[in-house]
Amino acid sequence: MKALIIGYGNTLRGDDGFGWRAAEQLAASHSIGDVEVQTQHQLTPELAQTMSEADTVVFLDAAADGPPGQVRYRRIEPSGDASALLTT
Image: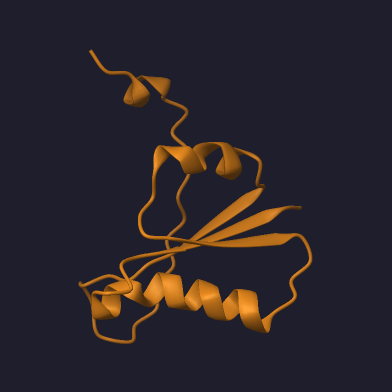
């Protein structure tokens, strides 16, 4: 099983850099088998190829809603709706 962890956010904007910093610490402190860790300023379409090659993708990001320090988990499922990518 190949996993991809993407930590993203703007490191110049305080708390918004949480995902980036968390991913950096994971990569530095853990030698995890078949796991790739990336840091990104934002999610872009160019990540689609890399994500499609992973069995599991974990996104690390900060959120402004909720109490400070709260960690939340939300499962995201692919919609399978290619029309969301089409423009007219």
